[in-house]
Length: 636
Image 1 (spheres, rainbow, N blue to C red):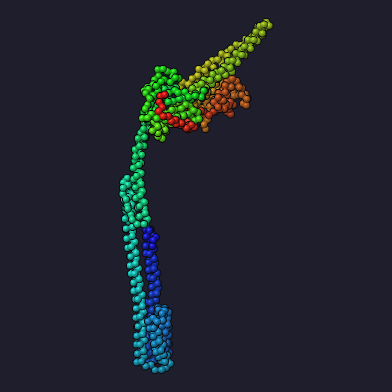
Image 2: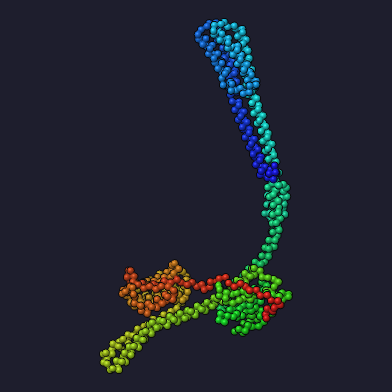
């Protein structure tokens, strides 16, 4: 009972089970009553036919008594036997109640006794030759018929009683079912439908952001518990929603300020990355705008000197004095509005030191002052981190550009020195040895015919040195004035096509902006050197230059259909091939020269290009350091 009081689901299930149980019992009772009524109609028909058999038996006895004959005797015997068989047959006895004291059982016994004691003996006596008394026989026949009529009447009454019982049971179960259904509907209406309606109203009002509606459901079932829970949740949601609205309002203001700060950083980045090494003119206006927007300042920037491991202050907003290192006395970036900021009423402030670093490389520190009573929010800290990243990127980029320029300059000087040594210097050394040989021959006063070959060698050496000098000058004057490497290669193939007397084919499949200028110069010089060798030695009628990028590597091939190399495994390594091999090693790649399968020579270099991505930023390992200072003058 307690479960039914506490659970609506249990009550609904109990109602359904009760209705189902009554339906099952009603079906079982109906099937039982119908089963017990089976054969009642046959028994009534059989009992009614016994009257006809009795009349047939008396008539047959009278005919036999007036004119005895064997066939009439057989007819009487057959009717008597048939009457007795039907009287004792299962069609009649099975329809009788099993109780011996039942009225039908008593009437059946009386009927059977009258047949066995009165009518059956007379039939036997008549068949034995005795005379048949018509009047007594008719009286006994009427008595038997009366007994049969009473049996039929009792059978009909018994069958009607079963039908009335079945109707009464159906009405009873129908009434009980109606009562259970009415109780269930009442319970569903007041404990399910109404609470659900109130819960739906609560949900709709909550969807409209009206958290003041309450269901106030009473009871201990599931919906009442759910209603009380939702009432509590609505109250909590109302309080949370009000708090969230206030927080959203604050966040909107903070977001608007952050967006404006990001715009300042964006605008400042253009000047920062385009201003060269002049951080004063590019960074100072951006720092002042951030101070005014975020309510912080002053801000100071110091760069780390890797040689003597010290911090060199290079920029300070709201500074009273010009920095001691300052080299431009016409610059007033640090002296604009020299009055120190009033950070708080009592002058207490804190300093936040942020590392200006790229990866693990410390480039400097950013000093940010703010009032002690107003701690920096997370969004402000993120903006300051973004500011330090921008400053670190600008400083690091400038340093890398200077380093790259120095490295490029040194590499070019090394290449020039190597090429001069491997070409012109060797030729001049050879000429010097020939001059010494000629001096010895003149000292010995040898004939002019003996000295003539030496003069020829000197003349040929001077021509070769002059030709090498012109090639080196052409190489050193080479520039990439066009839009890129493809344009320079096209001009080079046109130039050597005119020298060779046929068109040099060019196949170029490289994404734009893949190579840096240093790599483009090396590739162009390798192509020119290889085409120069084709012009001098190959005796070719076809040549092609292929530049293709695949699988993160750049492959450059120069082919011709000339005479090829004498020894494919060990090509002649004159100074041109040596220079090309050195260029390939400088690019971090591989150099190859061999005979083509179809005839001619193949010169190829393959290397992974270095994209122009100078900076790979990583989270700074250093954590910002907060300094506490009381009554400190920021400008001091």
